[in-house]
Length: 289
Image (cartoon, rainbow, N blue to C red; front, side, top):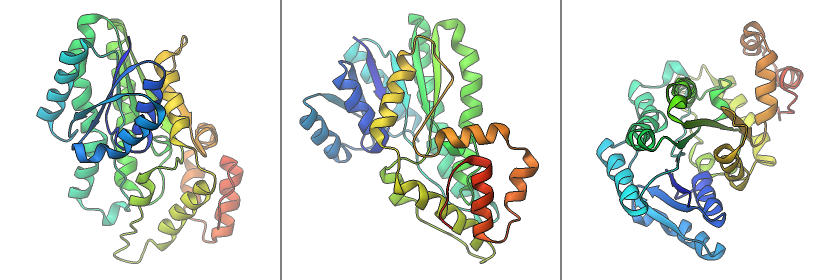
């Protein structure tokens, strides 16, 4: 029986993945910060006729993470797959984002992953098998405008995961990154701030919101990402990176071709219509303008 622990399983991608993997016959443990946050997960499980075991875990607390991993191992005997999904957004341009705001985002999106990895790896190494899946973002591939804390955390996660994959492959452990584009989750509704204190960054914020407005017209669904998580864990020819969601494949392909100079030059375009036209040329995506 495959045993999975999924962080941030109370909403969005994590909740969908937990229910999906349980429906595939896995034994699934879904972590959340409090039992009150698990009501929607319980309702989805009841509707699907599956069981996901709730685990209380705050990924910003090392003792809480260690306790959650130990609880799952004690109950199930082992952990085959760790899905580091818990994450938060973070809007803001670099000049006007405080260090504390950067720290808050990094504590969840990067350090929370590290805590989970460090807690589960000794167990996986001892067994000589295991899979760690880190849910990143397309913002870990391309520096989304006016989301400096979020981008910094996801780029750091990409580097961490690349190194981790080499560190543990000789121990029989698979590591994968999931890079969703725009997906319809609660994080979108929570991430609407535009802290433009100086008024100097109207253009950057507007273009960031135009990008998400476009994607949210036809967004990817959490169930789509759940299927990609399953694919990453079971792929007979595993890859390091898996992309999904609105804009995911287009942005990855475009970033692979674009020069640094062309990327920077996008920011100098004054007209939103001209910006959208150039964005279309580079990434094959139609933006509202």
